[in-house]
Structures are given as structure tokens and as C-alpha cells.
Length: 107
Image 1 (cartoon, rainbow, N blue to C red):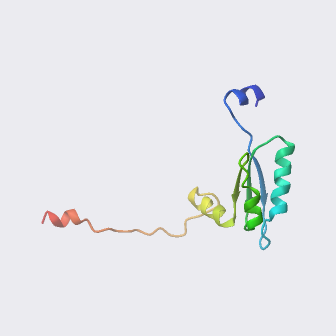
Image 2 (tube, helix red, strand yellow):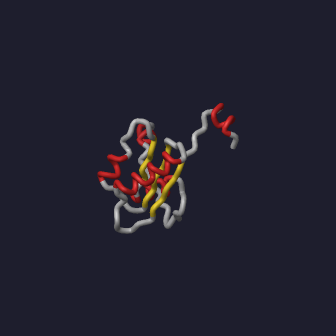
């Protein structure tokens, strides 16, 4: 899009980095590298997604007031996938019934 239009309606670019790691957590150096890439592009918003988890150092690295960096770990990614029906399938539907107490009040 046009930079003029982006400024006028205040659109920001959001940068994304994703890591598909099974065992190793994402650490502070990984976040620092991403922050460096954001700075290189003059960006202040980003999302870092991993199928693993983030270390405490990684979580502390994003606590900067001038940045809006969202960390999504494997657990949160799974929750979001289920919530938004992305990459999930329904195995079985369960019917839940609740007693209608008003029905019995009228008897």
C-alpha cells in the first residue's frame, strides 16, 4: 500500500517470525535477533510464534514500552487454532442437557 495512505489511516506493518521447534525453547538471543530485524525495518510491532515455549529471558526481552511484540507459544497457538477452527477437525459432538426448572414450577 501507499505510505501516504498508511499514515493517513494509521496502519502499521506487523512483522512475524515463526519457529517450529519441538524441544528447544526460544531464548533471549532469538528475540534480540527479531528485535534487530524490526529495528532495521523501522517497525515497532511484531509477533513471534513458536510451537515450543519461551524462556524467561525471552519474555523479559519484550517488556519494552516503545515496542508492541506479542509472543505466542505452542500452548497459546493450539488454543488459538481450536478457537478459530484452524487446522482442527471435529471428532465427536456431545449433546449437553440441562434441566428446565421453569417447566417443573408450572406443574
